[in-house]
Image 1 (cartoon, rainbow, N blue to C red):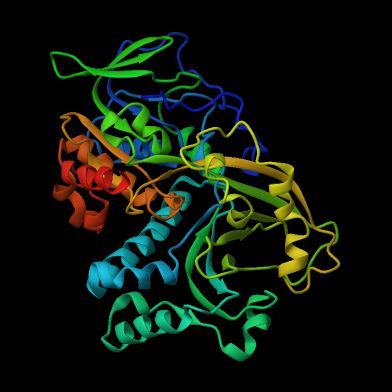
Image 2: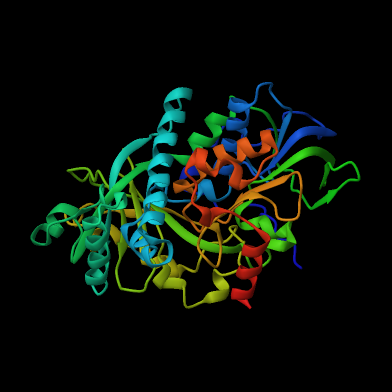
Length: 442
């Protein structure tokens, strides 16, 4: 099987426009020979796991964090920068999970937002965190009736997932959302932030970091430790955490076709003429039923981070599916999607002269059932994984990492800690789930 590793020289994203002083840090000149815990990946998943291990452990363990390229240069630094769960996602899960299961899922995401806020405040991070509302806007309301039917049935039954969701009044849709041609809109809680600043500032308080150190092989030694092979040597670790998202199958073959790299596109749009009032919500916009949504995160300075653009490239499957090359951009024809994006879609932006200031690509980890894999690596004793976030990691990782930290410290499994963190069972990785997912893709 081909080696799935982060490519060198990825394109620069807006979030990476202010590189951290430790972006190329190697805490020691030589790679350490051994450690208590090795963590692979320096994004939100890897760094928050390390943070919570230090917070929870009675004595500070020796942790080494390995990063294949620059610090936090993967999906965390290329995403939309907001944490939420769409109403359509919640409603679509009612037939599968039942309303009680959706209550659990929605409560978990709400808790993630609270966890983000607590870490930012406790550690005094300067990462532009805002607790906001987010609009899910549809320009094609084909599915609105079925969505509303599921919502109303659950609401009348008293299910908690419906409590903090609002439907915009039909006669004021454009006025309330500022989106031209809006046919329906729902609002949900969310948090937005500068994710790269969150991760890099949190890491300043932590641990031994080894950037530009790709891991090429994992093997288990007779004494149970993990031998982690890199171009700089071999690190022996008592415990190992895979915070590797889209790249997981490159090191854990059992995840082949279960966590698949998927390339996405985002842009930073800057108005030349300031627009008032400031957009105070984040957005998911679905232009046509069945299409993927664009996601928007207005920045405090009045600029906009927008991701998605699926209709412009999804027909060219090799350009995005099972593709982990974020060193190249999509074609100029595809990137035309972002030209005058705000002027076309948002009222009040007609004279803004807003233009894409930067366009980039990023790699997400997709799973057949759309849920991440969390817990002890199936078939491995001292290895844990949190990966396969399907582009929604900001809504799950902060609490999932906290749970993984406890598993590593205690040597425990998903089922042992799930109740402590309200984690839905659908997140749990297992041999059975891997088998089902693999069969689904064949």
